[in-house]
Image (cartoon, rainbow, N blue to C red; front, side, top):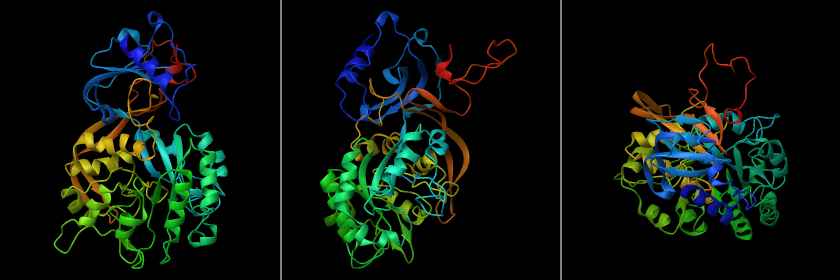
Length: 439
């Protein structure tokens, strides 16, 4: 089978983190059975420029074939996804998941546990955005990263204590580029970037030390610009201070008395520095969160083509139950503003994977780990909120029907991958098992 040959080649040649090793041998083609076949959906895979009806076959936790018609008799389980959208598992570039008890801080009770929200939103990879620093990363790794079914990656905070309270985030003495880079280089499969956030002073020290750490570790930097100050203008940040490939998050921020990303001139036109910054390779991330998505900024900017490179949530305890909700809701807001679905999917899959240099994620190529989201486009009357609790009317929104993480079902809204229950089913009184572990 051509798909199996492609999968074997991809497995043998993969060198990116998370790729299969050469020891993962395939059985003879004559004996092959797919573990799972997603049949009849519209596949959108931006990396491979696919946007058309195709089936997706999975074996051994990996995608082995994507084709217009795959014989269901070869699969242990066939799941009909007709009328639904099949996309790579979503990659959320900006989350806060260093959850532990003790205090109302982002690096504590305000973080959220990844497995409680990610699967039901179609998200298979979350990137923690600087909740831990070099002093606290090992605890974060033990408490959350190593215990989560959801893939958890991290931007390491330039502040050694991470987001352990705003007073600590101002301490220049705890912004150590060398120690930060050393920790990043120790765990390159997990730490994908450096983060600076919430700095209030007039100096550039937080940005400069984060960039220094990024240079030492050869990874990108994400900046939450903190309190905006005239001594360090945002324009200078993206035109001079950051390097190509670095990321400015909260791109539509507008909080009076704290900070506003300058987007529009007095006539409501996009400021020219934005295109210049993007041209030099700066990435702009949504970072919706609790405060960073006002329609007054978003609508005129999007109408003029100022779109995120990446859609992310900035999910934590305050944002999860407010205007943000989840990744499909954030994506729906751009659909409501007329952005094509294939572009919205790219901003939530392949583009964030590229930002963190993880080419093994965000696509459905043969040999890729089978992280898959199956989305429904609901039609009707919906209200989409901004952070000022203002409603935009919409006639469609996205909802996650099914999520696969490494080929396993981790969310199934309507039991599509399950056997039907009836009185004659011999398994009706058996203990619960994972769908793909059933005989």
